[in-house]
Length: 325
Image 1 (cartoon, rainbow, N blue to C red):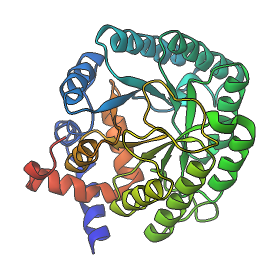
Image 2 (image 1 turned 30 degrees about the horizontal axis):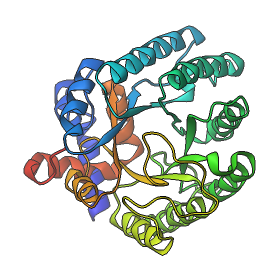
Image 3 (image 1 turned 180 degrees about the vertical axis):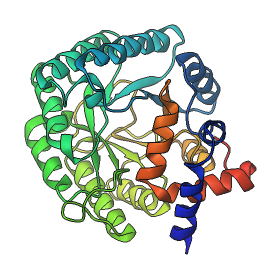
């Protein structure tokens, strides 16, 4: 019943006028420009949060469009530095041209990672749908081989292949591997992914365990209580936790602007009370800050790709006081 109700809310929302979608999305999107994102980060930073910034954009249709994303992310780097923000970057490889011209796309990504490295800023390659999973992982490997260790990737727990991907990256990158692990927003085919909730949670938890045991930096991007409870137990069993030096023998050197081998990550506007609770306990918590002119397309896409968001929309509408950002 809950799933049906959620899908009904989503189906209704995406048919509403743009202003209504904007009202719903303002909780989850920092606005159309960088100035709005900086204001939100300045406010949330007082709560002990750090950030990852994403310039919104759908698949580009020409390699020339990638120039916008490259230049805009350079402005983001300037804003992080000028405002003394504890933030890194999240980029979509397809926005830099990976699906149009792989060589040029790689060149664009490397240019940004080079500038970010000069400012001691980490770059996370978002994981998009299964069309680019292998290419995204290969970009990370190639950049590490060139000495750019300030880059990592996202892996999705729902995909059957993810444990094998972790094993491959452990062999290639050793303890310099740096992940964001999430359940996965893309509703992939049953032939390549888990589709049931409990299956996805179990698979995601298994990935978290494997990442921690590999000595990798593990960013747990989840609002699901079962995943967070599992993570807290997994950290305790490995004697990891807030204000404790990473005890894993196979862990790499301490990472700048990072936690002791792990952190929790949440979307802007989702489970704010839970994030603040984790932060109060001493865990490093990072908020995903999306902004950009493509806020409408982003909002519609997230609704269509994950209809379970409908229950969050209903709660924000009916009881906004229960979940402030």
